[in-house]
Length: 535
Figure 1: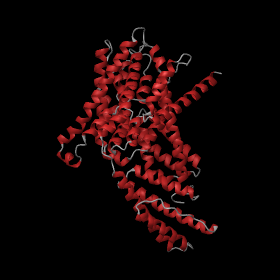
Figure 2 (figure 1 turned 120 degrees about the vertical axis):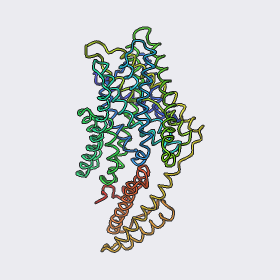
Figure 3 (figure 1 turned 90 degrees about the horizontal axis):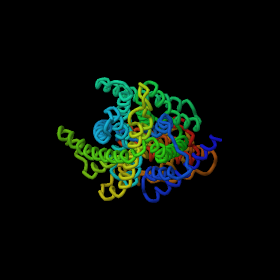
Figure 4 (figure 1 turned 90 degrees about the vertical axis):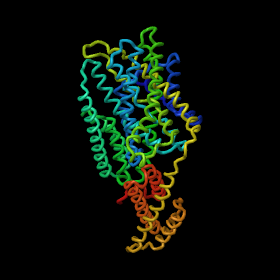
């Protein structure tokens, strides 16, 4: 009966998640905000059971697919071009924020040691850019801003968790050496990336070895968990393992599976990531009751006030760091100023203001050990968890709710670069399809009429740089099959042309995703969705 009771809770939470997400879409508010508030309200209703999250479960179940999917849909070209600002935010800002929060915490909580204070700083330092980038894309803000926020959210978790583990190690009775800490970071990062690439290569091999779309989708679902577990077992960065794996697999996924697998896999992954994000944010709110019960009587108010001050400190540090990180490298390098002019100040301010905390902050706080090596309770554990929760709530509500009006008030210039890339990609893909048709016309295929129909189709497409021309294959079964064979060849030529443009940096992964999805839908419509590139 206990299991049935838990199932009922899961069903109830899923219903609440769907309802709140629908409301969030209608009022144009990041859905994590409403989910956290909804969880808070639920936790205050009499009779609702107290929810206590297992930190190991949070890390293992929720993080791997969310990180893998975020990396998969990140453009490697844009990530590489913006590696300097991403690194300054994901590494430099995390370290600075950890130190600043530690100072504030020790000032407000007398008796807190440096190890516990730095652990708190590392917990609240990495922002979660899920809600920010979702709104940013919808409002068409400059793509570089979105790329930097996405890239930061992929890498900063690894930096924060390394600092966190070193601080927790000291807090439970260990020692700390700066040189050892640096070596730990280098080892965790390099080995984590290597594990991710290795898992991606193995995943690609497995995808090529099977020809069933459901098995292929299951393989992609298994890959992030394999990367995470191997990373944890080797004491490397499991976060970077998932990030590297998702980035690497995307570069080869187009040629490894059939169109129907890509379409079905995209739907499965979208639902999975949505459900995981929904559950984790509403569980953040539900966790409040258990957190508040762990604070001694009379101590809740001071701890909440400390959480507010820590939140303000984290926001102020980010607002100060972002413009300095943009200005100082250009002051020191004339070549950088010429190659990469200073971004517009509205863009800089938007990046500085976008710092909502989320799942990693919650999971790291809950993962704090209960006792030290001597068997005594870990000092300030309950206070650190509640302060971390306060930071999540304040940054999500304050910064998240203000993001949409702020973006509109800044009057950011729309980024038309990707539209131009898309037009160029469509024209080039159509040209390669026509080239392939000319080759096929010279072979012993009795498809002369079909070739002319397709040549006319691609000719019209080139004239308008990317229309969705409609060709209706009819007549006899032999004629229809001949047409499908030709269409498979031309769609393959288009797809390979787009992959080539992505690989040489002419277009981004986002443009490839969009156009490849159109090609996949066309292949499924014609009944050739199960044929691979090299069929």
